[in-house]
Image (tube, rainbow, N blue to C red; front, side):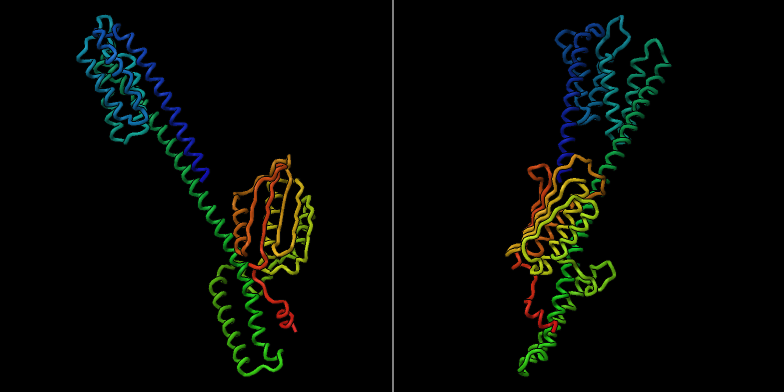
Length: 402
């Protein structure tokens, strides 16, 4: 969106500059045509400004409607050559300024108008100048004007082709960028769905195991309670099959969900150690027991840390990175990198890492902010409430493992 607004502003500024240039050219043409009109034509003084305006001001339509401007200029040129006598020592029934206006407008018609209009404009201008501006050259001038005007038309068509090619290329780049952004967001959503699928499938499997083994682990289970446990197990199995049917197709790695272990919060220090071994100047601190963080929240914290470290290494190479993880009722993760004087290494098209991290935090009921820090670096801060995350009673987990 910002790129589109920037491009639109750039086009508007370009049009304003072009219009200002057009007005300047028209005024210059008028300033030249009016004082010299009495030298070339026998025109009353009161009529001279109007004749000069017909010679100069049609150029103002060069961007708005070049075909109309050309028609006005060509029609007034024919009228002036037939109705207004020129001076005895002047062989040009049309002023030079008027001819220049015709050339400019014919060029604009070649760039903007359709092919039939271009052909009509070229033929009509050639006939007008070839018949009225023959001069001493006679018949040679009749062919000279069509050749010169044809060169103008060919140049205009070349400019038109170049402009259209550039416009099509820009449109294709915009479409490609939008499609790339949409694909990146969809891929990130698919990864989030796969991760959540694995977590939910894991816990639903535990529910099935607990429901099936409860009559054997708990003493004094009545037939009614046994039937209730069997109903819970059947419902959990049905829900698990539906989850696998809806989300299992999102997996692209060929692994079964129960055979694809997902990282947890306790794996964040290992992730930082790996970044340190890879050459990242990283320091990390952990406040609180990571083992108490539920799997879904832990997975989100791990992925956010992973993406933050990846972005820091790409966009701020050799800058120091600090990771702080505090566990409480709300788990807070802060990844901050300092400023760097080293030029960032070129990477592929990105720009969707922050959106993906925010989606991961939102998926577990949290929130994430990211932006430049006061020291010129960059900071990512995530807050995930444990009460909103997928969890399971530790006592039940212990009983299921017995």
